[in-house]
Length: 297
Image 1 (cartoon, one colour):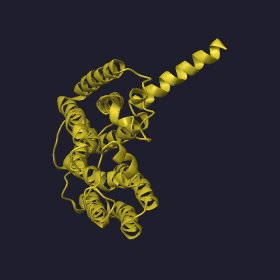
Image 2 (spheres, helix red, strand yellow):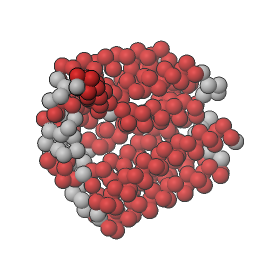
Image 3 (cartoon, helix red, strand yellow):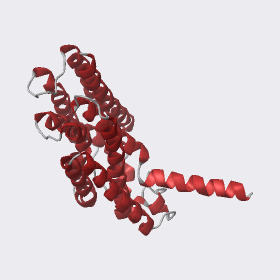
Image 4 (cartoon, helix red, strand yellow):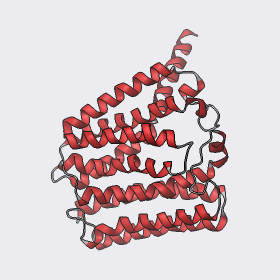
């Protein structure tokens, strides 16, 4: 009996730790950072790659922990978030703050070991997400614009970690993931609209599930596609796409655009969910295509 209780407690602690740091989201960010690193590096340094993975994870984990402390009362109002550790009362604010602080220090120190620029961008990401994006979420839909900045940093962070340089190449990677944030988050904001409303969050650009939001979603999807194809035209230094890969990226973009148009036509929660899933597939497959293109050309 006591062993079962101990096992349950351990499981709860591990689950809460994964939830407070949003482990799945953090791992997706690590994936983006690693992809950026592989694009920028001439010869893979596995020590740097491991440091980037851990530093990136700590960076995202810290941001998410701070976010859940700040929004604990609002999280308790929404079905999607009411079972989060701090909102549900399973984890104290002090414990969550300790985790967030330790993760911040570890993340910045580890990224600094790679190079100071990487640490600087990591620190900027934590600051913007925690101190600007999170407070703005209940104030204005422009919070999505602010949130898109730290959200776009991981892809370019990998390049900076590889080269210790910020130029046109990481700037392009930043632009791709920056524009991608809008259809992705607006799709989430659409199908979780009623739940977000309980917490006072209005993530859609018009604050409504209307044609205006759907049109803007299409516009930013087009910008995402265009930004993704820029490396094929030789304007972006060492970041380059071969014609075959450009065609693949273009097809991925047209697929994403299809789901954005479907949202405009149907205006349904189901269409928004499909767009969200399409957006996740798009950014993941795009990064894979970019990396394979570099190493197989």
